[in-house]
Length: 284
Image 1: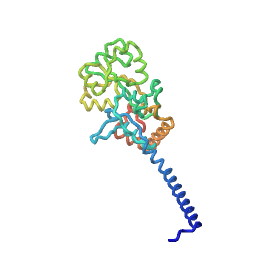
Image 2: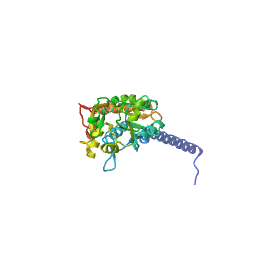
Image 3: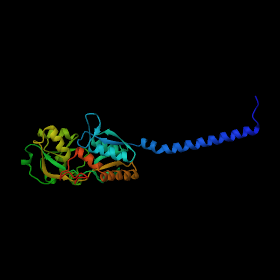
Image 4: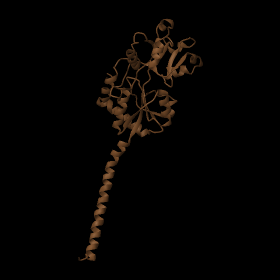
């Protein structure tokens, strides 16, 4: 068998080297083309949920749904991310958000204290917090403002870690008001306690209260008072430890786009009625 000439051998090495270089170039182009997809798939944000219909709940198929859940899922998808829902009570969710172990906390009110550790999105909902009264309480206590409770024996149920707006936070700072407060963990249980006469009143988001009282069969027993505690606008809170201002801007653009193209309205219609009191974005 005859060995190739030195000239042919050199040409083979050159061709082989050129082919290898072309293959490496093609591989690099393919890797760069796939990077956005890989990054998008890798983008997962933890989102708080809890059994708090109509904002978040687990449906009969085991899927997390609700106004907040669906809105978070859709908006995150628009910025190339997916939501991983984490079940947390409200007080614990604030701790996790501050530590950066939770990325997104829906339906949050902006406050000076929370701004230390959270970014806030554009407004997503305005549903008033209303004072609800137990059986016979309306006849005993006649007042139109929350501060009129000061100096009375009124027992007010308040969820631990929950802000009911600026007005409530200001009154809560009054030492005289602490004697009126009865801390509660779960609002659904608090309705039952109030029906038994163990607390006199409870502050609750109107949309949640209407649904829960109807489900518990207590809609005619526990009634809303004339006291509107707050009309603050709810927002998505993002942990400053894990979410950048740039991401927040992209998320806000996604919400704005959903309002413009009607997708926000579709999500709202699944869970919330447009009433004069509940001013959801996209309502006529």
